[in-house]
Amino acid sequence: MADHQPDRWDELLREAALAGAGQAQRIAELCVEMLDVTGAGISLASDSGTRGVICATDDVAMRIEEMQVTLGEGPCIDAMTAGGPVLVPDLDSRQDLSPDRWPAFLAGVASAGVRAVFAIPLRIGLISLGAMDLYRDRPGPLRDGELGGALLAAEAAGLALLSLQTSDDGGLRVDDDGKAFQSQVHQATGMVMVQAGVTIEQAFLLLRARAFASGRPLSAVAADVVGRRLRFDSEDL
Amino acid sequence: MSQDDASSSGARSAVRERAVAEMFVSLADTLVDDYDVVEVLDHLVRSCVTLLDVSAAGLLLDDQRGRLALVASSSEETRLLEVFQLQSNQGPCLDCVRGRAIVTSEDLETDRGRWPTFVPEALAAGFRSVTAVPLRLRDDVIGGLNMFSHRAMSLTEADMRLAQALADAATIGILQQRAVHRTSVLAEQLQLALNSRVSIEQAKGVIAERHNVSMDVAFEALRRHARDNNLKLHAVAAGVVMGEITPRFGGSG
Image (cartoon, chains in turn cyan, purple):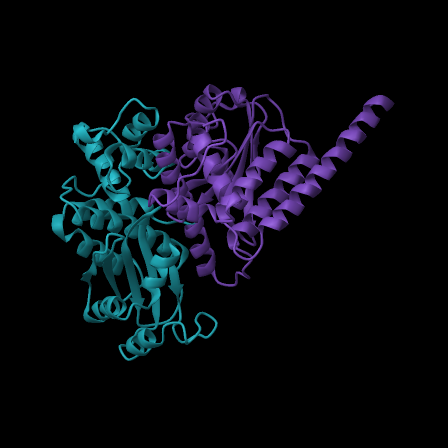
């Protein structure tokens, strides 16, 4: 595995957690500080229909976000549809990109001097939250460690958006016990969805809130749910 | 080796060769146009247990964030999943991925010092030996095929070669047959596979709760529904979570 500097990212993302309502903005700024990119933007697009630009680090990044929301096309739209990152290291390269893929988007960003775009969906399995776009005014791929950092930042940004959509004030806790994003957490999310009769997003928030309130790791709470020692019935909520 | 031993071992190897051939044919069948990555990987880890002398098998992928994430397991038993996932921090599979080489322990009892956190957990789950084979892509290693046995043992040279062939097939499955000349394509495919697995876990939870069944039974219901209706596992998982699909249970549920 490449050196991803995960500790440094963890530390910075934890700092970002303290920024409250500005979490998403701070995460976008961290990407610009830590990665060889010119700007970053984050948009919300949940399955419940809420969508819009959350933040951008500069005017060009804002334009990239707004164009995609308006046009309904672009790398972050594709990233959300596919459920995986769309990385375009050179927008002028025919090898990377067919010119008819996003005609209006490409015309719009070329005039703004954008040469590379890296779009990462913000999602946890079937919980779809939005996307993060990183752009650069020069072509070239993200290096191995940079991609790792961008993915960590996207994970954190996803949790920040999740909190924005609800009254969740548990704060951003990235991978709180070093192994939060594991099978049982996701299985428990599905179980809580049925028990409490809520959406999959809300079920994940309920799990996190319980972990936060009881001061226990998310994975321990999830293990109790999967082991059928803990239920989230609607009358208890 | 006596003549009797030799002939019975010859018969065994003929049976096995046929099983191996059948496995690769059925794998080729799943690698058609628009296949489901998790389904293919699931098929591969189950084949490991059938074809090799191992008790359990799992595939862990480098999540490109400095961790290993489980994407397929021969059983959904919680204890096993925990032993796999523990290796995000320590264990033979992590060593295999970092060192880009096969890592084995013929007897975990004697390897407690090597992986102080991992070994007690693996032993408590009933395993005595372990093999981890890298998923190679040219100079890169994108994950590891991890196999456990209840006995202290090591794979034969022939089994080891087959294990590596299965690991290589898994790499091909993850790359979705694309010619990967860009690292970005690899990154895109890896993230897709990992997220697909997360979706399936969420759907398993929904089914397990709704029908009061184990995770194993829930997963089998998902797979059966996908197979019977010619759908991707991922699409069935999404349908279950959206409440659009309710898999039926054949007897066991």
